[in-house]
Amino acid sequence: MLISRRQEIDMTDFARLLRADGPNPEHAAALQLYGRFVGDWDAEITARGADGTKHTAPGEIHFGWVLEGRAVQDVWIIPRPAGAPAFPIAGNWYGTTFRVYDPSMSAWRISWFDPARSVFRQQIGRPRGEDIVQEGTTEAGELTRWSFVEITDDSFHWLGEIKTATATDWRLVVDVRAARRKG
Image (cartoon, rainbow, N blue to C red):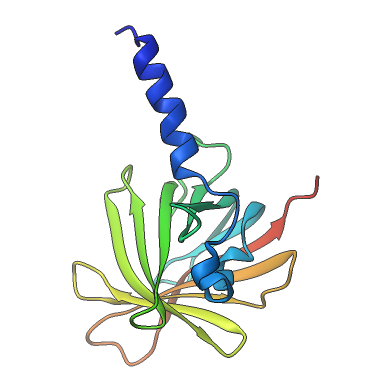
């Protein structure tokens, strides 16, 4: 199918209209909770099975300002390069998160979309001390907790945990250590 000149312009406009240069001034301070991650990151991902098995692979994460600077969007690609053989336990990720600050609840509404694996999550994110904790529920009723911990200007540690209805403790499923790309 050929793309017309009008469609080409529309897609250029789409990218320009989606992307923003920085946080919206209306809630600039609150927007920095996730805004500090804007940029490109290399990551080491460890998936952990319920039986104690572990698999590690490289990945990449990209954060950017979108929607007039009112939201932060990211893309997680695991393992790298995209299209690599299936990553055991966690599967391959090529998904995006929209993180939108909601001043009515002083928290973030989080939506994760990974269409290749048909994984879609809704969470609420808030600062907890120096960390960021996002909580939600899967379609199967498991509780989810995704946390950014050990945050510095050039690194963060991300933990993906679940808790089933019958469990008393959280189980770590995915552990990500990310470092900001230089240059």
